[in-house]
Image (cartoon, rainbow, N blue to C red; front, side, top):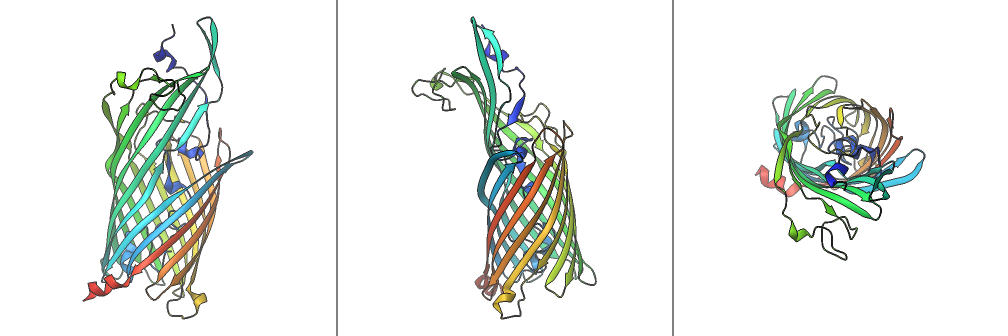
Length: 423
């Protein structure tokens, strides 16, 4: 009789079923930093101000330039499609929620909640394997289904050192969970092993904004892990999914063994499954107090080694990344009463490159974004919409991927709080 534990070590060639996107199958999942626009108000820029003149929602060293307290919410929809394939995958959700409080133009503090990485993916064997047992030839197919993700809660502050320098810091708390099923399908039957995981980690960021003559500003960012992300895993016993619903339960017929007849396996912790190092720099030139041109560069390196730590759907992960961004922005004229001067425009181009750890496959993405904003009421409430289109190429193995993203954002200013604070 063929033992189940031997079946688990059979080798299969797998292909992605593109539940969300090819990059979801690498490592822990798809980082939201690699998917278009972080928030509607910012556009493509991360460090350089584009939300308002001299203000970036994602750069704490610029927050003291806000005139009022702001609550900013951004919601986005994403679609991934593939060259030579009519398959399209779409999903939507909260992109960014920020609450920022300036303090007398000398400093600020803020809180942000945003998605960090998406783990949704399904993979099945590309080829069916056959073996002979019990005087019969059995077809066998393996699949992996993973769901869940990680969120980030950021606490940031800034302080104006002098007219030339402004310092910002932020602490990022990573938290989330996932569920994964490894399945082996026989003719009319399937054997499943389920596992669950809970994630936690802490990242630290240091920002510096430097002002020069002629409206030229330099922005830098350094990120390092204060506590590399770890996972607490729970692996469950194998079971025969007799009722075919993917869960270990009782139905018609009952799964085998019956859930109540076996105990849960012990939890165990895996340390350092995500240990990022990031560096970013941005340069901005202002014109006429309304228009800006910005260029940015950022690099990412995954210092954690995922070998033999996790079951990774694609058995590979992104080791290094680089981003280059060029953007142009026109800001509203706060001194004008003409409604046409209340509009803002953001547009830009981005080039991204990634390198996988095992296969050394290179991923390149070229994209562009166009955003419109409208400022209303005296305190400067703001509505933004931003569209991103990108083409993602893989040096081998995977199909060309097209990425579309549409973001909507609303930012509300709190005049009452400012008046109370200034008394």
